[in-house]
Length: 203
Ligand SMILES: Cc1cc2nc3c(=O)[nH]c(=O)nc-3n(C[C@H](O)[C@H](O)[C@H](O)COP(=O)(O)O)c2cc1C
Image 1 (cartoon, protein in one colour):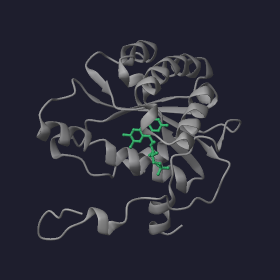
Image 2: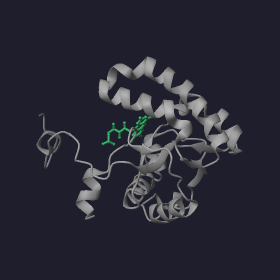
Image 3: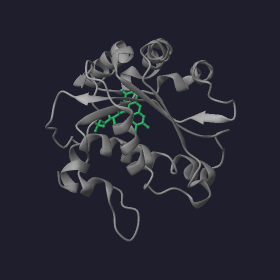
């Protein structure tokens, strides 16, 4: 797959995840090795840690916590997303315990305050998260962020996984082989609506 196709057709996949096909440690390690080439702030180049949950019993516990967080999140924010996306998100949350791999990227805590610090902090993990998602795609896998436990239930997940108190969880990725091979570019704003040269433009 060429780079433009990979970049424009890698989607958040929730309903087309193969819940019956296991994901090997080797393929996840390979994708993470690729993701480690992503940029990060110099001081945070080696800061990230990743926890992968393959154990079905542990997945079930994390899925239950995610479900609670998701219900709370949907009560607050469901009106902001399309009905199609809401249905898709609900499907994933309802099946999360069956998703073969749950992946939690982590960073040293606490999460900083201040625009520059926050920018460097999240900017030093999200490029790797996206690279990881792209790398998964090259192996026929798909993923979606499903981070609802971050709304106050991080400690519950940390306790289950033995994540130390001074480590911050950045997200939770549901990872599985995809039952769909072909994806299309999504609807996004036209570049002309979001770009201006040599100064801010009112569109
Ligand atoms: C920071 C971030 C957080 C996200 N959190 C969730 C989430 O909690 N649940 C979910 O279903 N999707 C989540 N997503 C996926 C977005 O919903 C998805 O990227 C968006 O709908 C666009 O769809 P696409 O990725 O298929 O282009 C998240 C994405 C990002 C970048």
